Length: 501
Ligand SMILES: *Cc1c(COP(=O)(O)O)cnc(C)c1O
Image (cartoon, rainbow, N blue to C red; front, side, top):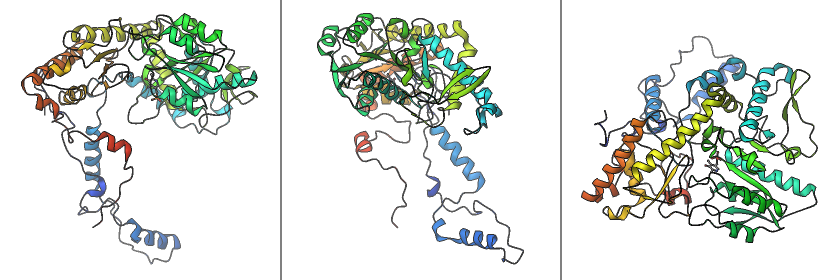
């Protein structure tokens, strides 16, 4: 199967069915070839093994030959849409290329095979890598203290909110609320709830930024702080960021910055310099470690010196020429993850940062912003921009003009993009934009791929003018058409069971 050139739909690797391994007919040869027993079966272990292999509990397990198993997993891998196959413009998710040098470094045997319970003296290299990464993240964000433990962005958020809670508790305060703008990622209110707060929503203005007057009205002495995404989910740098921080600080609150969108700032602006008290990073977004499909992540949490005593333990410290895990922190909120986090992901991020260097990281940010604005410029005549404000790393369109094309919706456009070999952009988020289509190309994409994306969007709109059903029933080049997403969310079937015979 091959592409049919610029702008046309192309049959991709995901146009096929693959049954579960359980559903394969029993292999003629069987999956395992056991030699016939040529000694008397008197050894208890051998007798037990024999009994286990005859156990009816194993009936129904897949029985594939080696070759069938290889094909099965190879076909499954082709169903896996990934950044390695084509542009993956999922807004807010920063699906960038994962340089293979990261994989080489992470597979260094001394790092890969280090047991998490080894004494500090035997894992000096791993601890040094963590320590260097900590220092680099502090430099990048302008915040002096950090924990690498959280295993995802959302867990970094929870950690950060718990730091604020611990700080205020130490001052004898128990505040009830957290402010969250209406454009926030869903994990923000969820993290605030889990940390024991109720959420007060702050409105956005017509320009997509926080409505500062609404913030000032809602910020009072019963509010622990504000969770703010900057640049926000429209890709806009909050113009009044200093005033926002002053309003929150003025009432004894703290500003939590959701730094998942740090790809728009690295090397240019530092949250610690513009008044943010606590921040999480998504290493699996900004710093290129692979993600998607629930794979391992890392959401380091950084904070001011004031909040530092509450950071999780253990902490990686350098002391007398040695690296040590320090557990001595009486005010710590405790552990938030096993051992000291997802080490393999941390090592990949360190490799990425060192490979690019300061100038390279700055260029990464600049090209990410350039690419998003390139798409903005080339699509603004055919789709309706959510806001006129200049955007940074991503661009958001509304569905205001889509219905003119045969009545199609954001969902239809996104689904048809799959037939053109693109992972759909983020849809219907942020909630503040009607029928939002949120596109984040990242700096990885060459101009030719951006042009192919623009051509695909234009071709789909033309298709919708001619034959709306074609677009409304897309995707056509995938093993499934439209899934019932509501049913999937409400009634998830997470376990395979053999159908009753
Ligand atoms: C991705 C993202 C998160 C959550 O990160 P996870 O690692 O998926 O938990 C939080 N906020 C924003 C703005 C994000 O884009």
